[in-house]
Length: 168
Image (tube, rainbow, N blue to C red; front, side, top):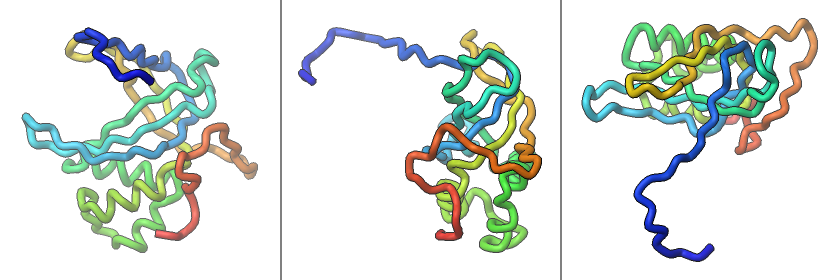
């Protein structure tokens, strides 16, 4: 690539958001704890990719989205406990961190970064406008992926090749 000044002052990245529907999502690498500079509030960014479309346009498959969990609130704690339960990780996390874990602690966040990528969750999602008028994906419901006794196969794989086992 030739490195030279392009003269650009802005660039549209054409980030495609999925249309409303119900999908099987896979958690991806890139989980981050973020702090809002203005409010000081901390959220956990959970990157996801649509692994399978259940209801909605088939071209949603492969599109990426993020879910933000306000981990310094009771609502955020409830969400994270639900996500860990639905992905089958709650027992492992309770064993490692106890039943009153500090979910803002870096050790906890690092364990999420290791264990959550590759896990599946069913999701109902809508599209809404944000405060600046841009379309954003709004997750309205998470559910455990029903396996009906069958092994769930996924198309996407976590970049680190992990997502299972008990190696912390």
